Each structure stands twice: as structure tokens, then as C-alpha cells.
Image (cartoon, rainbow, N blue to C red):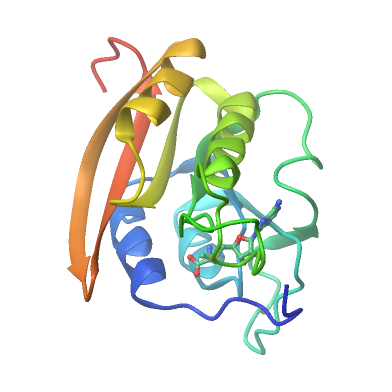
Length: 176
Ligand SMILES: C[S@@+](CC[C@H](N)C(=O)[O-])C[C@H]1O[C@@H](n2cnc3c(N)ncnc32)[C@H](O)[C@@H]1O
């Protein structure tokens, strides 16, 4: 890992646009990078928390959101969040080198993000996350199903050599 925070890019913007439809009390972004999504979410959620292995460097942080240096959501107990979002290291490469972008040969890192998100989201909450077309959606769907959640794709964008998609996981058979 470089030690420098991940600077927002096209993938960050795709997730941020998808998150515009959500509002509520509490939200968490796992792997918040430089914190741009947190500032945006703080306009629509009362409590906004971000975690990352790397400290953000944003000058305009202004205390609008809370940031915790933590592995995944290890700083959180229980299922407290209405929304949990993440844009994980989604490149299928390994062994894991650059923790900001490389997700392991079998995308073990995005899968660990999803397990953590499903652990800390409220049972009537929503998990929103981004994956590339290197991911097999059915593998992520199975993880969701084990937690009683269903998965659907809610957005996508082709960027150079890959297609990025945003997925939403909500309680299975929810009418939401
Ligand atoms: C692709 S970047 C996305 C950053 C930001 N969410 C965005 O959309 O711009 C992935 C982020 O996950 C962080 N990360 C990787 N492994 C992590 C872990 N185990 N716990 C917390 N954050 C992690 C990286 O440091 C990086 O900031």
C-alpha cells in the first residue's frame, strides 16, 4: 500500500451518483478513501461514518463526517446503519499488492467488504456497492442470500477497458 489516500476518480463518481437517492439517519462507507462521498452523504444522513486503512488528506473536511482508521467495519458492533456503501479494491489481481485497488485473485477483498457491510447494516437497511465486470455477480448474490438479502444492479458505466456496475442489496422480498 502506498500510504497515500485514494483520490476520487470515475469509479468514485459513479458510486456517488448512485448514492444520491438514499437518505436517513445513519450511514457508513467502508474504505472511504479521501472522504468525498462522506461529505456528500452528510447532507442527507444525520450520522455519517467512514473507515479506511489510510488517513484522508482532504483540506475541506470541516468535521461534517466522522472518520475511523479501521480494518473494514471492525470499529462497529451490531447492526446500526440504514445504509452501508463501498467502492472496494475491485481489480482482480493477486496476491494483494496495492490495497487501494487490488482485490485478490478471487476478489476476496470485495467479498470481505460485503460480509462486513451485511454484518453492520440494519435488517431493513440497504447496502450499495460497486464492482467491475471481473466480478461474478452470482458469488456476491450468494453472500447476500446467506444474510437474507437480495441483490440487484442499479447502475453501470463503461470506462475504458472495463464496465463498472453499482449493486443494491436489500432484505429479500422487500418491497423497497
Ligand atoms: C477503490 S478505493 C475507493 C475509495 C473511495 N471510497 C472512493 O470511492 O473514492 C478503495 C478504498 O478501500 C480502502 N481499503 C482497502 N482495504 C481496506 C480495509 N481492509 N479496510 C478499510 N479500507 C480498506 C483503500 O485504502 C481505498 O481507500
